[in-house]
Structures are given as structure tokens and as C-alpha cells.
Image (cartoon, rainbow, N blue to C red):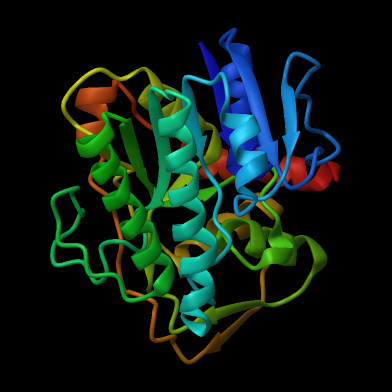
Amino acid sequence: MRYLVLGGTGFIGSHLVDELVAGGASVRLYSRGLTAQEDWPAGKEVERFTGDLADAASVERAVRGCEVVFHLVSTTLPKSSNEDPAHDVATNVLGTLALLESARRNSVQRIVFISSGGTVYGRPRASPVAEDHATDPICSHGIAKLAIEKYLHLYSMLHGLDYRVLRVSNAYGERQRADRGQGAVSVFLSRALKGEPVTIWGDGSVVRDYVYVGDVARALAAAARHHGADRVFNIGTGRGTSLNDLIAIIEKACGREVKRVYQEGRTFDIDRNILDVSRAAARLGWRPETSLVDGIGKTLQWMTRR
């Protein structure tokens, strides 16, 4: 079986490629650039294609001959998506529709899509949040992710294109780019190493579910192999950590105090988001294996080497 990883040189994508290659799979990656970080060890056995999700012709060439496609591409961030919702729709939703058409034409068996467990649910009415929770996103990023989920279901009904959706919580780990301002763990660690203050929106009591990227890669690979009726899975740890507690863990790992700058909270931030991951455990046979302390330690070692 040949796997195509859209966004294969990105943060999560590069870890997924490593996971698939280690399992002996035939892997093709598609990315706007052919190289990831300089320490990324993907070998010659990986077939590489260059292009953008909006480039339908390039996507068509990459899809051809692949049985499973991992869709990990996103052009927006939750914090900035509301500034230009039209761009969000044009680059993510429309680009995905072209991908689905290409997958249909080329007899792709399954799409595995990485959605957002942090934004598709909106403000949680229960904690932890299960997959059957209401979906009322409060940012365009979440709306676009949810729209793609719905189109995946539509193509499954109309054309028999199988799919799995992983609603991932706050992923962190090696190769995450702190300069993009996404991922509290990476941003806070980067600033701590530089002796710079950390900006916290609100009073630091906001709680998130932080999941290590290696565990996310294992979940994606498991979703590609899954046989069963379920199509949507939460991927997190089922445990919440406040920003203040996160900084305390980082301070202990770095052996230094981190200066904190508190600013007024943002309208699109929710107070608490913890995912119920029991369905993934029962159906995919997947569980998070890396604790937050250990994951932060691994990320710190990688940042220090760089």
C-alpha cells in the first residue's frame, strides 16, 4: 500500500512520515518545500512531490497511484483565521474539495484528515469533550475544519470514498516552529531558552490538553489501518494543564525562572478544553504514551541541540 502525506515536511507530517517509514510502508510526501528541518532523517525511500494544496494539477499527480491520503495541510491559525474568513475558505475548503475530486478519480481508498479538537467544538458544555459534543466553532479555523469533515462524509455517501477524521488537541514536540506563534509549549520553551518573557492572554488559568507529536503520528497511522464504523476520533491525553502550570513545568525543565507578562484575554479563547479519548482507545487501540513532563524534556533537548 502506498501512502501520500500532504504536508509531509511539516511539524506533524514529518513525524508521520517517520512513523510510516519505520513500519516499512511505501511513502510519498507532498509539500510546498522538499526539505524539513535539517535534522529530519527521512531517507531516500520517500518519494517527494512539490506543490500547494491549491495547485490541483500538482495534487492530481501526487495522488495518482496512492491508496491512502493523509491530509495534514492547513493555511490558517485559529488566532488569525477570523481576520480573513474568505481566505480560510478559499485556501482550505476549496482546496480540499479539489483534493477529494482527485481522490475520487484516482480510486483512493481512504482519506485521513487532521481536524481540530481545540476549535470545532466551540465552548465546551461538558468536560472532557466527547466526539458527540455539539460543534459550534467560534473561529473561522474551526468552521473550515468542520466543513471539510462534512464534505468527507458527503463524498463517502456519494462516491464510497472512505475517511477517518482525527480531532487533535494541542500537539507539541520536536520540529514545531515557535516563530509561527502556534503551540504554547514550543513558544514558551523558545522564550525561556532565550531569557525572554512569556506573554499570557488572561490570568493563566486557561486549561488545554497537550499531546506529544509522536503520539499523534501513531494515531494517524492507526487511523489508516482501522476497520470499523467509527469515522471521527478525538486525539489528546484526556488531561488538562493550565498555562500557569505549563510554565511551572517548563521552569523546572530549564532550571530557570520564566518571566510572565499577563494581558487581557482574547475573545476566541475558551476557558477549558480537554478531550475524551476513550473512543480512540477502544476502536483504534491507541493511547497517549508520552507524559507532558517527558514530552517537554524531549522538546527542550531538540531545541537545545539547535
